[in-house]
Image (tube, rainbow, N blue to C red):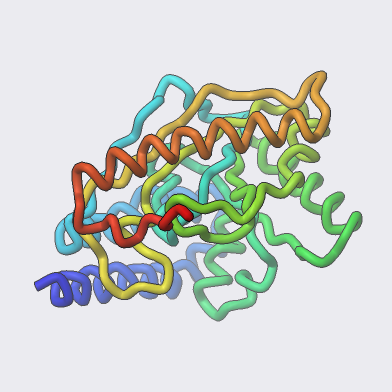
Length: 253
């Protein structure tokens, strides 16, 4: 049954995205706000409806009082593809910083570009950082929040691959608050797994932190501690509530 439910959830979810990407091409001829509305209000609600209906994945948004609709950077833990698709349902018009190779993908990558995603050359050095800063400023100046995954890649629940300091560069130069976001999505939408496990995916928005008056080491330590501490709490809560997903939690030595 789990396989069949996962098959239906994946097929309808990604099928909706594919159709959405094709329709995006004529929508792209209109002002960008039309593409944002199209994805935030039409495509993604339909796609996530299939995830809820067949995979049994629900969402629990905590710390709503910490959400800022604009002039903010969100530093989100990255465990699955689920947060990359669903974030705009909690913080509308949000855009992401992503590796530039993704926008070259036919249809899917083009849709990300027209939505206003911010592609970054990870090997571009100082020039790439300046370009990223410029593009993030353009988005935030128009009222769009920006999401960055400070680890740069997906991690298994209970692990981290190290926080990159690019977010400090943005927060410091743009004078914007950074809102840490803890999640538990990796238990239900595991990396490189076809199966989708039922349960409640939690997005917990934590109090904003500032880069003002802090060294890079101080800021990065504060950010990592906030996210990883809350994720550890969510992991324990999730495993207790849904023992069948415990296999996705990294085993401690």
